[in-house]
Amino acid sequence: MHKRAIGFLSALCIAGTAFMCSAVSSTPAIANPNFKGKAVKFIVPFSPGGGTDTFARITTKHMRQFIPGKPKTVIRNAPGGGSVIGANMGYKAKPNGLTLLVTSGSTVMENILRSKGVEYYLETMHPIYSAPSGLIYWTSPEVIKEPLDIFDTDQLIFGHISPTGGTGSLFVWAKELLGFTSKDIWGYEGGSAARGAFHQGEVNIGGESTIGFNSSMLSYLDKKEIVPMFQSGILDENGNVIREPAAPDVPTVAELYEMKYGKKPSGQAYEAYKLIVGTRTYGKAMLLPTETPAEVVAAYDQAVTEMIVDKGFLADAEKMNPGAPHFSGASLKKSYPQSVAAPPELLEFMKKVYREKYNATLE
Amino acid sequence: MLRKSVTLLCLIMAFMLTLSSANAAEPKAAADQASYKLDKKIKIGLSGEGFAAGQEIRILIMAAKDGAEYDIGYALDPEPVPDDAGKWATTWDAGRFVGKKLVKEGANQLQVTDADYNALAEFTVTFEK
Image (cartoon, rainbow over all chains, first blue to last red; front, side, top):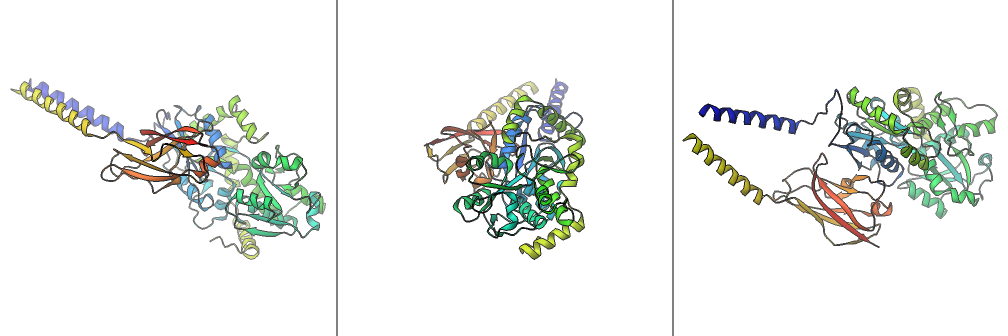
């Protein structure tokens, strides 16, 4: 009897130890990742309700159906520092497949410029899904009648958050490449504040993502209350700048250059512009941390592969940005690192322009 | 003798378990008002009790759009951390959620979770026009 009691207690201890071990272990099964009963966190480095947050909300709504184990998905907004705070958080997250970073063009610009406070390296992370989000700029019909008129006026006034931000940087490099003039006002709190400044007449140039333009500015275009100037465009699979499918009638900066000067653009300003077009092409992306095991990355790649042919997802994506392609898998992993970092000599040139013309010191 | 001892031990353990479960406060949380205006400047007091002292807690809301669950931590001040008595209190700056229509008129479901988003308590915040 005594031996039996000891045996029972021993078994109890072993079972208890095993239970405690399983309870404290948080490492996912690497050989066959399954996230059943877990929550996957998507860090959005902006406030809720904006473009990147909307991209995350709609994408995760569909993606969770295809992640092994169909986990709960949670959006964690971490705004501040032009997306640097949240991006640092996502970069440093445990590489266990339970945290992903959602980026925008601004996040990529900060990565390229290595601004103060940037501790993340997007080129080392694992992109699993990306969708382009180009930019469109417009002005008032009192200022120009057609895009080529921007070269013949000194009345243009642009305003946005900063010359290194997503919308500001494309404008800066369009100006550098095209050679038109404008008065620039920096320091608006956000995209909606800059849009408000346009509507109140403080500035007469507005800039918006294609998604935002199609949802909030099309009615002004229909009433001829605005005139499109140019769009950023996006990169095709060969690295050429093309018009976004959602804005087929607006010339790209490169096209406007050709229309004005009769030749294709080239030089460092063009390379800087193309770099920023890359940030718009791959800016809206979902990334796993650098050290994430290959099996977990593969599981997410498979989930995205299934998601981007799903009818429900495609219907929602079409509402967000009509005709936009969906980047995933090996081609995304090949293109992405080249689009989120700059060659040293190009970076030096860009920093020099920011320093000398915009009084923007990045270190 | 041994059988009696084991039986007695089991009885004592069962008694202690019953006692501890009766004493352990069930975690619960609530908003400080029955309802709030759908106002872009609204701030909402939230509090809870019965949590483990010092435990990391997160607060989630089931958004009114796309069934998304949002961790509202960035909009809480101060960060909610249960004190030695297991109580916490914070203020939710919910204006952005109102402005972007991520909360709806009527009852909105919120959840207090641990750091891994396992549910600890649920409560509602009601908005009215």
